[in-house]
Amino acid sequence: MSVETGRITTDIPARMDRLPWVRWHWMIVIGLGAVWILDGLEVTIVGSMSDALKPGDTGLGLSSSDIGMAGAVYVAGACLGALFFGQLTDRFGRKKLFLITLAVYTVATVLTAFSMSPLWYFGARFLTGAGIGGEYAAINSAIDELIPAKYRGRVDVAINGSFWVGATAGSLLTIPLLDPNIIDEAWGWRLAFGLGAILAVGILFVRRHVPESPRWLFIHGREDEAEKIVRDIEDTVQDESGKQLGSVSDTITIRQRKTISLALIAKTVFTMYPKRTILCFSLFVGQAFLYNAFFFTYGDSLSTFLDVKQTGYYIAVFAISNFLGALLLSQLFDTVGRVPMIAGTYILSGVLLAGTGFFLGSVTAVTLTLMGCIIFFFASAGASAAYLTASEVFPMETRALCIAFFYAIGTAVGGITGPLYFGKLIDSADDITGIAPGYFIGAALMVAGGIVAAFLGVKAEGRSLESLAQPLTAEDADEPGPTTEDHPTTTGGRR
Image (cartoon, rainbow, N blue to C red; front, side, top):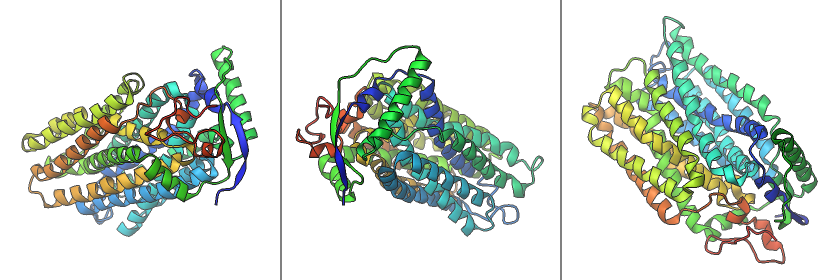
């Protein structure tokens, strides 16, 4: 049951959104955004070392289907972790949870490095995924609530795209680590996982200085803490920019609550915002199947069908193109707009992937990688925008759990079935054309997601979070109730 603590009128959202970009914002980006580097490192290490995990003496005796199973188990852990930690993030705060989830990831990665059997490996991968899934919910919500509205789209897309910085690092690291002339085969893949834990500890030290979301604090009856944090941020921004900040007149009135019931959250998602629910589900399913199916098994495809002995170089080139796509296209999500950019990147990448599927019989390792670079240059920006969409179009009290919900449901449909399906295709195929059906399914899901975005997308560029979805707690005020997708407010719930 919800516990009310009072009713307040605050100008904190407007004050946060009017801030200019300074060094302080980069600290937020580095401290919170580095989780995607970890995720990219994890996924790429597994994809690059598929051959190293197959021998029974130096590896774990895994088959191609087992490699796919490990990917599916990792994603399953991420789905459940997102749901579990997402609910806690909305209840206990962003900061507390993004410290806990990073600790879970760190411990689980160390356990992976010490795997003694396939079962141990699968279990450790599940726990690693749980930590990463929890990170997605806590971090995306915190970033959107701390970054000014003017920059929110480009920052969110670019940060989510930093997954590929980790992917590049992971693929290059596996080259010396999996070279038997440099490191013993039985230890190389273990050291690769251990490096992820070392990086996580470094991130933990930076993240300790990231503040709690003031928006979360004032809704949960801790307005004094919220006010102090915002004043400290404003002082820092003025010192770093050398300019005085102007005053704001926009305010919002809310009824504070210690907790928000799951029933109210479910009502919000399915009855107040049904179109946004369909939109987010479509975007997450499409990108999850595409990426988890293609990328989890990309290294295995190169080594199995195209006789590539060292897949790290190919995966590094592929990863760099993905990061460049998210980085270079990110600003357009704030200028050209969310709807045309999301729809365009999804549809274009889907069409290109389908075309590649028809020509798999004539590809080489180089041409397959080149096509992958072109396709995923656009797909990476679109996939990053899926997380942006889920994190900004629902009320603040439900933000983390909504991210977790769509990540979990979409990824369960696309991210678990994808690796399993591709793993079986690789095991049963006589040549690379046998995996073409997977390409066609991924292409169809991406195109479908793009079409849904074209019709149901939300024009969120430059708008405050409160104008996109008024807080649920505003419905208890005397003024009109919260925004719905069919009856948007022009003032963002500000009084």
